[in-house]
Length: 200
Image 1 (spheres, helix red, strand yellow):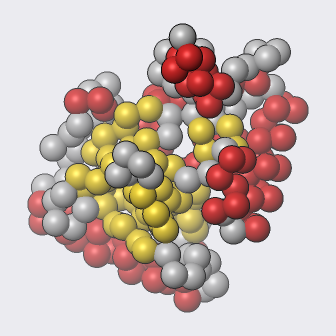
Image 2 (cartoon, rainbow, N blue to C red; image 1 turned 90 degrees about the vertical axis):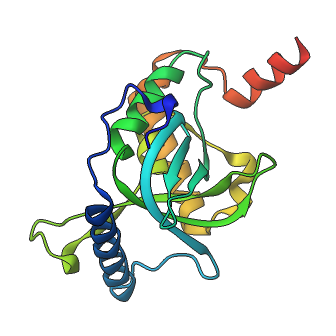
């Protein structure tokens, strides 16, 4: 059940039985990471599922255990709108990272559109290929580091102090290296772009 907005991405290849096994294995790896001290935020809810749609550079659709599609807005980032420069590239990059893959979403709230707002994590196998040397990859942080999203400082108070500092440093590094949208001398932040659209 791939979303139309991810039509350019590869199709899913998990049959239901294989998908169930993959999610079970994914949970085991996530538990192993937590036991090793890579714990998620206290009190946060967790959503496990496969990514079946990518709407833009900071919004995905996750198919959960009950085969219900859940819209997820990546917390802590704001990617260029689709009509802005780098908007399509940000979407394509996000799709290449997560489409058709199982993810863990750690979240605390929904936005005004009803979307889950949370940190999206891929579990990446370590060099040994075993659960005990796996690691998490924060997808939002990868988008920032690639110069395809801003650290969304308007909502940084919702982040842990560690994430807030890491996101800010990563954006500064991307700016210094002139990655992605930072190749432009004065890129327009998406919140300013949206404000201009509303007032126009």
